[in-house]
Image (cartoon, rainbow, N blue to C red; front, top):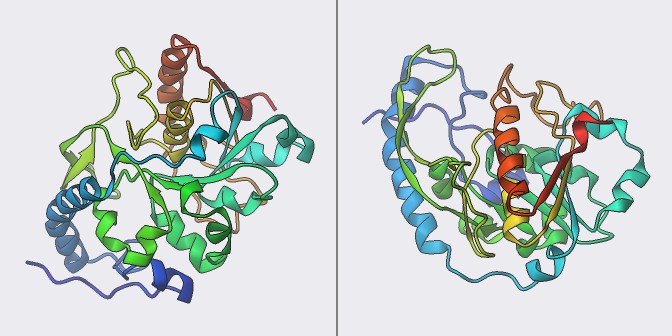
Length: 286
């Protein structure tokens, strides 16, 4: 089996949460890195899926039933529209769900949540900001629904305890592309995507469909599952840019990374509307 290349150095806060691992963005891509990555992802993703299933039970934090049913929920991303709304815009919403680096905007003056499906930005956040926002929210309001199942084993025991974990509703093997390579080279055990034509919002629990295009759409699934029937988004432009106020905080997305999100949002919008859930993306109207 290929040996790993040099591991990435993490800051003090991230070292308490993550085991160090080599990242493509932090090490010079090489034949050694490629061999290590493609040979370890299959079994790491499968073992991560098993670990997640063993960890996640049916216990639901009681606070979720206070924060979502009958409440207006706002999903907050880091897109350019975040800077186009005044502070009073947020006053119209009862519960705020911050996606990744949007947690920088937390005011802790009402029910607020952190949500992600990709733990990579969590590591970046810890290096640049620290762990205090997560600690103030507490694990019941820091929610992870991992789309990359191999991340389960990248967290320390302390890191896993920082979050409430959700599990995928279905998963299977699939081939994926890597970087600019024009054909699939990575075999990964991965959450299956919902069929919006037959999709029904699951009852409140710890199992949801994980929408891979962006954490914001999985956050919508979380809010709907928890009982919110008026779900809104801001900073979820599904474009290549970041809000200027966030641009220096989080690594910029790759070109076209959110191209599929608009189509997914449209299908999700229609499905939720048929089930009595209002979904509004203010990112496109401000």
